[in-house]
Structure formats: C-alpha cells, structure tokens
Length: 180
Image (cartoon, rainbow, N blue to C red; front, side, top):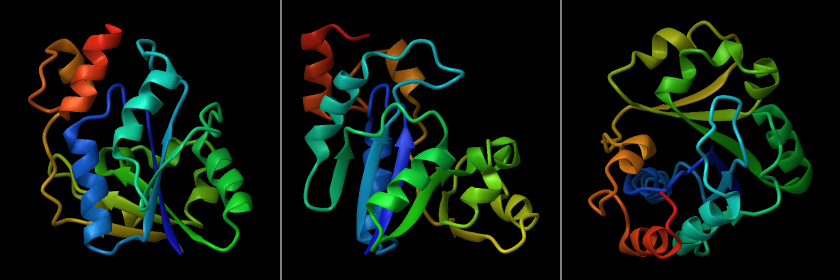
C-alpha cells in the first residue's frame, strides 16, 4: 500500500489541509494518508496542546485518513520516517510537503536519508519546484503542480478566528475549548 505521511502542527487544521489530503487520495497519488501532528517545532511557540490538535483532526479520520497519536514527540522528520518504516514494513511511504519546504530542504536534519523516500511536493506560491529538485541526485520527488491550493494559513486563522476556512466541527471545538 502507498501510505502518504503528512506532518505538521495543524494549529488548527483548516480546509486547506483537508483539501490537500482529499486531492491526493482522489487522484490516486497514495492509497491512505497518515496525518502526524507534531508536539512542537523548533520555531513554533504558540501551539495549543497536541491532544486538542489531534482531536480536531479526528473529525476527518476515516478508512483512508488515519490520525497518528503515537509519534507526536519525534523531533525530526527523518526520525519519524525511520520509525514509520519499521512500523509499516509492507507499505511504501510517501512524505508529503509543500513547495515552500523544498526551498530549504537541504537544511533539514539528515535530508539525505529523507530523499530515499518518495516525496510528494505540493505546489504553492508559484514556486519553481523543479529548479530546487533538480539539485538532488537519485531523488524520488513527485511534483503535484495542478493542485489548486487554498491560500490560507493556520496563523491567519488564529489571528482572525472565523469559520470561513474551518470545518464547522473544528470551529465549534475551538470555541468550546477556548483555544485561540
């Protein structure tokens, strides 16, 4: 099985995240997607509790969308992929990233290990993805250039909390738990 691995803070999960997941599944890039919420990032200080972020993601869980609750404290992507490879031995793992991440991909810790996996790169902000991927030898990049991404960020949503970019269940969860 082709298992997509979508890692992020999802602080909060918004319609852009879900649109991306559905696009990859509907267009058969992968068979299932495992969404892994990080407990923390080196550059993020305003994260709500990881359990709240997992609970919001669970609204979207189904037979093809899996929400991970066990790998949230792994600090680096290469360590997470290594752990998932051991756990999902019979599956082919596809790391899912946005085009904005390929710009500094060579700065990621042990990125050389990551390029052994298939990496799906979603277009964003008119970034010339190919100009960055061409610098990596023996890479397994899959560029998704025809995805019509939703121009929204979790930061924008936190700053102007409305349900314009949020599923109603997520919006109600945020309000009920006074998260942002």
